[in-house]
Length: 329
Image (cartoon, rainbow, N blue to C red):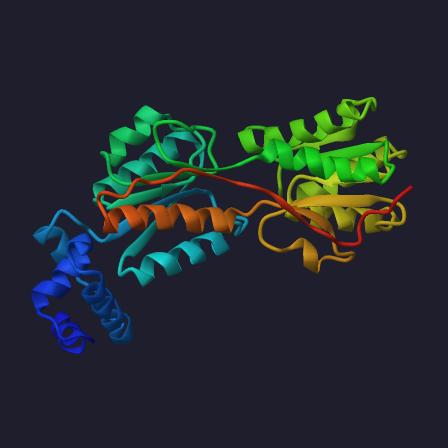
């Protein structure tokens, strides 16, 4: 196992300099800092975080809070964030939560272990609550509507859904169904709202019988597709507000003996490249959550390495990937 002495020798610096790079990198010349960081990577050196925390006010830990990851949705996101954090000699502590109480308890735990900075995907806590646990440390909120006093990485769910639905309308579809996500989530509500407004904006009649919301998982997508098509057999197109619901929906279509896009056209949100592997390849509107998280943690890291750095909020835009799941009628 490599030691701080090994790092110092390889980088041709003193142990004091290595310690300073780990604890106060902004005070070290860039060339020296890079040399030490490269030595740390080459030797796969892991600092003693407990000792560092005692010596300085820094724990070397960045805290990340996400909703429950039962579906595995956040797996690729956490992996991408971990790579960035690890590359800077920091550690990533990830906690999951469901509901307001669990969310607050999780943030309290991150505060108790003295995290240096935070990347938070929150659904319930107020700005005042967040500030009470983060104590003016670097914080970036991920995909939030709580924009203002705390830096945030945001995404226009409404506009993405509006434009996705318009693609079906432009292809001639008039009887369009929507499979929405959890009704308690603001982002899911905005996606459904965007779909409905696109339909109304086109001068089409909207009937709530063409909508079922509840979850982004495969089982709900399948059940919703079966229920919608049995109730409204005139449906010619479906917007899925989540990629896993879309994959379940395709199974529902097979159960009914219907094919896409010949009988039912489809467009879906996608967050982690699932829809391009479905059959048919699904026309998709991309929610770039991994890129959003990478940006957010890079801002936290920039602030940790340079106290004068100002964290910048950023709104990410959607984009489309063409497939062959929409048929013009």
